[in-house]
Image 1: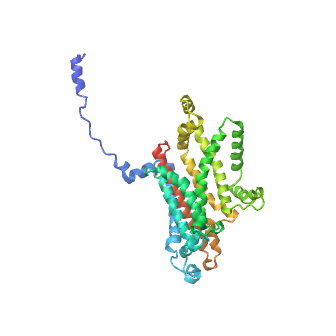
Image 2: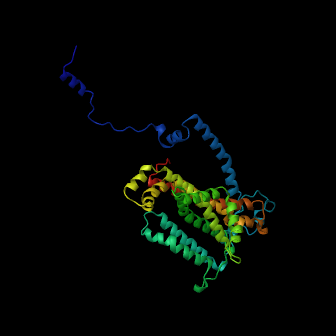
Image 3: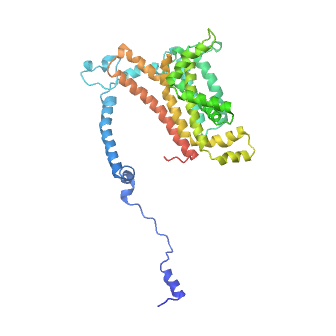
Length: 388
């Protein structure tokens, strides 16, 4: 039995839906907290076992940390007697009065007390410059660049070292210490290492044999030795090549050593981004008649740097933490200042070293986590395609 075309058309109309059904809610087990747990923590037997293992680790570590840092911690006191178990007749945790009393030394080092307002002003100026540059919607970012790269370095140098012509007493860099040294060395190293690393990366990819050879030798030599060796050479070996009687500031040696070391690693990060750029981008820029400088500045480098943002920020974080090695040339950064106070007889207790190290670690974590979060923000804004 066959159906006519009219009957078939009428029959098909019974199976055509003219209205869209309302969307149904997802199953309760896949939404909310339960859904998040199932998707992220309990999605497979391996993830379940790993989640249980991590939960047990937290259950063991967090109570002990809270006990040491908060519950059994000492919050008030004027000397080590407040943090000694034999005196307090109880188990003692962190000795926070030690951090409170030595706070100024951890920040300023031995910088003269009447002149410490200059350090505070430097911190404020640096915070303004960094905020101006990192705030992408900030007004007049062109003026911000002039301020950050020209006005801030000159004014900070005069402010911190002093200039009698304007009434600022000179302060020798041997008196600097604590967070002041950490921030000065890290900020200068970061600002210098990125452009120098870009130049080295371009030099390593250059078609000129002499430029390429010099870049390769510099990068491989610096990357082949530890930072301690570079700082030692900058402090001890470099003055041997200068004319007799030439004085080379100790802090400047540390800054030069850190910047040179970081630039070699930064060059390889940038070079990885350059190699990831398709060949068509280079050919397209050449077809437009752009010069080498225009091609790199307008076409290639913006794409390469966008691709390696995580690597660049990782190098910045490593550089910030590597400032602790300036102790080999007699400078005391934050960690060095904390360790130096462990020998203070007024605070010589079993809890003092751990408390100081926890404090220093927290400060480093805050700075490094801030750089990491800003890196993630930049990745999302530039849509680099990294999974988050």
